[in-house]
Length: 159
Image (cartoon, rainbow, N blue to C red; front, side, top):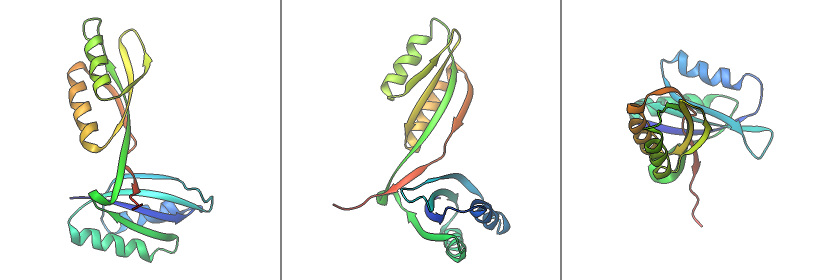
Protein backbone atom coordinates (compact mmCIF):
# COMPACT_ATOMS: atom_id res chain seq x y z
CA UNK A 1 0.00 0.00 0.00
CA UNK A 2 1.24 3.50 -0.85
CA UNK A 3 1.12 6.20 1.82
CA UNK A 4 1.55 9.90 1.15
CA UNK A 5 3.17 11.91 3.91
CA UNK A 6 3.31 15.70 3.95
CA UNK A 7 6.13 16.89 6.19
CA UNK A 8 6.67 20.54 7.10
CA UNK A 9 10.32 21.00 7.99
CA UNK A 10 12.69 23.78 8.92
CA UNK A 11 14.37 25.20 5.84
CA UNK A 12 17.93 24.54 6.97
CA UNK A 13 21.03 22.94 5.55
CA UNK A 14 21.14 19.14 6.06
CA UNK A 15 17.44 18.51 6.78
CA UNK A 16 16.94 16.46 3.62
CA UNK A 17 20.05 14.41 4.42
CA UNK A 18 18.81 13.66 7.95
CA UNK A 19 15.36 12.60 6.76
CA UNK A 20 16.71 10.45 3.91
CA UNK A 21 19.23 8.95 6.34
CA UNK A 22 16.45 8.06 8.76
CA UNK A 23 14.65 6.13 6.00
CA UNK A 24 17.81 4.42 4.81
CA UNK A 25 19.07 3.58 8.30
CA UNK A 26 15.84 1.78 9.15
CA UNK A 27 15.46 -0.01 5.83
CA UNK A 28 12.44 1.98 4.58
CA UNK A 29 12.28 2.74 0.88
CA UNK A 30 11.10 6.12 -0.41
CA UNK A 31 8.92 5.66 -3.50
CA UNK A 32 8.89 9.37 -4.42
CA UNK A 33 10.20 12.49 -2.71
CA UNK A 34 9.52 16.15 -3.45
CA UNK A 35 10.83 19.14 -1.54
CA UNK A 36 9.83 22.73 -2.12
CA UNK A 37 9.47 26.10 -0.41
CA UNK A 38 6.33 27.22 1.39
CA UNK A 39 4.91 30.70 1.88
CA UNK A 40 7.17 30.98 4.94
CA UNK A 41 10.84 31.20 3.90
CA UNK A 42 11.85 29.48 7.15
CA UNK A 43 10.04 26.25 6.18
CA UNK A 44 9.91 23.73 3.34
CA UNK A 45 7.36 21.05 2.54
CA UNK A 46 8.40 17.50 1.77
CA UNK A 47 5.94 15.14 0.11
CA UNK A 48 7.10 11.58 0.66
CA UNK A 49 5.42 8.51 -0.80
CA UNK A 50 6.33 5.29 0.96
CA UNK A 51 5.14 1.73 0.34
CA UNK A 52 4.27 -0.59 3.16
CA UNK A 53 1.61 -1.86 5.49
CA UNK A 54 0.21 0.03 8.49
CA UNK A 55 3.07 -1.17 10.70
CA UNK A 56 5.65 0.34 8.34
CA UNK A 57 3.67 3.58 8.19
CA UNK A 58 3.47 3.75 11.98
CA UNK A 59 7.23 3.24 12.32
CA UNK A 60 8.01 5.85 9.66
CA UNK A 61 5.75 8.47 11.24
CA UNK A 62 7.12 7.81 14.74
CA UNK A 63 10.69 8.17 13.53
CA UNK A 64 9.93 11.33 11.54
CA UNK A 65 8.21 12.98 14.52
CA UNK A 66 11.37 12.41 16.59
CA UNK A 67 13.50 14.49 14.21
CA UNK A 68 14.16 18.00 15.51
CA UNK A 69 13.70 19.64 12.10
CA UNK A 70 10.18 18.24 11.58
CA UNK A 71 7.53 20.82 12.46
CA UNK A 72 4.38 19.04 11.29
CA UNK A 73 3.54 15.67 9.76
CA UNK A 74 0.35 14.68 7.96
CA UNK A 75 -0.54 11.25 6.59
CA UNK A 76 -2.95 11.73 3.68
CA UNK A 77 -5.54 9.18 2.78
CA UNK A 78 -7.31 9.50 -0.58
CA UNK A 79 -10.17 11.71 0.57
CA UNK A 80 -8.05 14.04 2.72
CA UNK A 81 -5.94 15.56 -0.04
CA UNK A 82 -5.64 16.49 -3.67
CA UNK A 83 -2.53 15.32 -5.48
CA UNK A 84 -0.82 15.72 -8.81
CA UNK A 85 2.30 14.63 -10.61
CA UNK A 86 4.09 16.20 -13.56
CA UNK A 87 5.62 14.08 -16.31
CA UNK A 88 7.75 15.19 -19.23
CA UNK A 89 8.26 12.66 -21.99
CA UNK A 90 9.62 12.49 -25.50
CA UNK A 91 7.69 10.34 -27.97
CA UNK A 92 8.87 9.20 -31.37
CA UNK A 93 6.54 10.20 -34.18
CA UNK A 94 6.36 9.57 -37.90
CA UNK A 95 4.16 11.58 -40.26
CA UNK A 96 1.51 8.86 -40.11
CA UNK A 97 1.43 8.71 -36.28
CA UNK A 98 1.83 12.41 -35.39
CA UNK A 99 -1.92 13.08 -35.61
CA UNK A 100 -2.81 10.14 -33.35
CA UNK A 101 -0.28 11.22 -30.70
CA UNK A 102 -1.66 14.77 -30.82
CA UNK A 103 -5.22 13.47 -30.46
CA UNK A 104 -4.31 11.43 -27.37
CA UNK A 105 -2.63 14.55 -25.94
CA UNK A 106 -5.85 16.51 -26.47
CA UNK A 107 -7.94 13.84 -24.71
CA UNK A 108 -5.60 13.87 -21.69
CA UNK A 109 -5.14 17.66 -21.73
CA UNK A 110 -1.42 17.14 -22.19
CA UNK A 111 0.68 19.94 -23.67
CA UNK A 112 3.10 19.48 -26.52
CA UNK A 113 6.03 21.62 -25.43
CA UNK A 114 8.54 20.93 -28.19
CA UNK A 115 8.15 19.74 -31.76
CA UNK A 116 10.96 18.14 -33.73
CA UNK A 117 10.92 16.27 -37.02
CA UNK A 118 10.89 12.79 -35.44
CA UNK A 119 9.69 13.40 -31.88
CA UNK A 120 7.38 15.44 -29.67
CA UNK A 121 8.11 16.51 -26.09
CA UNK A 122 4.96 16.37 -23.97
CA UNK A 123 3.97 17.65 -20.54
CA UNK A 124 1.14 15.94 -18.68
CA UNK A 125 -0.13 16.42 -15.15
CA UNK A 126 -2.63 14.45 -13.14
CA UNK A 127 -3.13 11.76 -10.57
CA UNK A 128 -1.36 8.42 -10.71
CA UNK A 129 -4.05 6.63 -12.74
CA UNK A 130 -4.18 9.36 -15.42
CA UNK A 131 -0.39 9.43 -15.71
CA UNK A 132 -0.15 5.63 -15.93
CA UNK A 133 -2.84 5.42 -18.61
CA UNK A 134 -1.23 8.20 -20.67
CA UNK A 135 2.19 6.50 -20.55
CA UNK A 136 0.56 3.17 -21.46
CA UNK A 137 -1.03 4.76 -24.56
CA UNK A 138 2.24 6.45 -25.59
CA UNK A 139 4.41 3.31 -25.29
CA UNK A 140 3.45 1.86 -28.71
CA UNK A 141 4.79 5.02 -30.39
CA UNK A 142 8.13 4.71 -28.62
CA UNK A 143 8.96 6.76 -25.55
CA UNK A 144 12.59 7.80 -25.95
CA UNK A 145 12.87 9.68 -22.65
CA UNK A 146 10.73 10.27 -19.57
CA UNK A 147 11.04 12.08 -16.27
CA UNK A 148 8.51 12.28 -13.41
CA UNK A 149 8.30 14.65 -10.47
CA UNK A 150 6.62 12.22 -8.13
CA UNK A 151 3.48 13.08 -6.25
CA UNK A 152 2.83 16.41 -4.57
CA UNK A 153 -0.21 16.79 -2.35
CA UNK A 154 -2.23 19.45 -0.57
CA UNK A 155 -4.63 18.87 2.31
CA UNK A 156 -8.31 19.43 1.67
CA UNK A 157 -9.81 22.00 3.98
CA UNK A 158 -13.54 22.23 4.64
CA UNK A 159 -15.13 25.59 3.87
